[in-house]
Amino acid sequence: MTNTEPKTEPTTEPRTTPVAGGRPTKQRLAVANVLSTFGDFRSAQEIHSLLTDSGEKVGLATVYRTLQLLADSGEVDVLRTEDGEAAYRRCSDSHHHHLVCRSCGATVEVEGPTVERWTKAIAAEHGYRDISHTLEIFGTCAACS
Amino acid sequence: MTNTEPKTEPTTEPRTTPVAGGRPTKQRLAVANVLSTFGDFRSAQEIHSLLTDSGEKVGLATVYRTLQLLADSGEVDVLRTEDGEAAYRRCSDSHHHHLVCRSCGATVEVEGPTVERWTKAIAAEHGYRDISHTLEIFGTCAACS
DNA sequence: ACTCGATTTGACAACCATTCTCATCTTGCT
DNA sequence: AGCAAGATGAGAATGGTTGTCAAATCGAGT
Ligand SMILES: [Zn+2]
Ligand SMILES: [Zn+2]
Ligand SMILES: [Zn+2]
Ligand SMILES: [Zn+2]
Figure 1: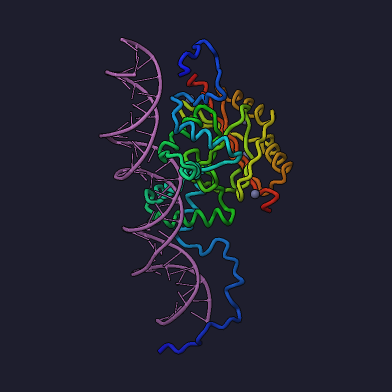
Figure 2: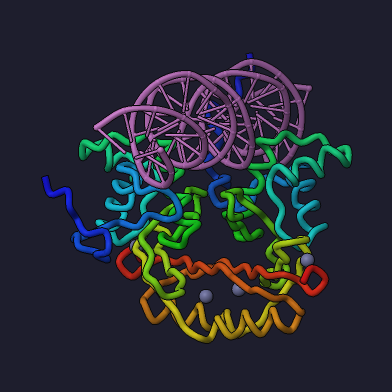
């Protein structure tokens, strides 16, 4: 039947393609899109809910796979919440941390070069590379005092 | 036998292990003891294996409960590895943070007034009180580079 | 030392986020 | 169109952690 060439001619072959993020499928675009809608960290399950609620039909496994892809390619930041869940956010956002009221949950995004410099300096001082860090500040906000 | 120990005597024995909050049971002492034999972070499951291998019969649930107790009372440090597992380690008395190799787990305790001042300043600036914070630094150590 | 109520334990079930499986679409390309 | 590699999704499997609850243990009071 189909008597094509036994093998595809390796003349101009796919190996040169840097599949950083793979194919731009609908599902992946949807995940990337929802990520760019929010500036803060969201869990994979949360992202999946947002997608299904908005009518997009994307499987949970695909959400996880896409987030891992994006994380591996450096397009999103990933961190672990205190109870062990992974949270993702688009990394084009400026790096920042959170000041959270432990009573009402009111959150303030904070940032500053001070702590960033400090962590880098500390890490370099001990010979560590590829530094990342997690920092959360908890307190009682003025309204809850 | 020696049943006439003077009650007024403060501490006569080598080590009365004061376990956090609750009763100093055999199981809790065993967990606390195994923690003091290691300087780096160990998972709960790992600690449980160490205990059972050494003959101590302690249930896994009890290990988890004890570690939570110790963590809540500040006697051990707890952090989340980058793959989401909780890791525990005996804690030194002073407030500090950790620089952890994400490859081999090598941990350096770091501290400094810089980040402490920064968090307090940020919090005060936004009217928050009773400030606490969590900060972990991850990287690849020199040996793993 | 004995009793009794409160605490703690442990075997196992339940949870839940994440990953795996694999049959079935899609996409990219000719 | 036609094909093969890549991607998807429904559900099962995984694995760490927590919940359940009867039984064991502790310890203060007697
Ligand atoms: Zn508040
Ligand atoms: Zn930072
Ligand atoms: Zn290392
Ligand atoms: Zn600190």
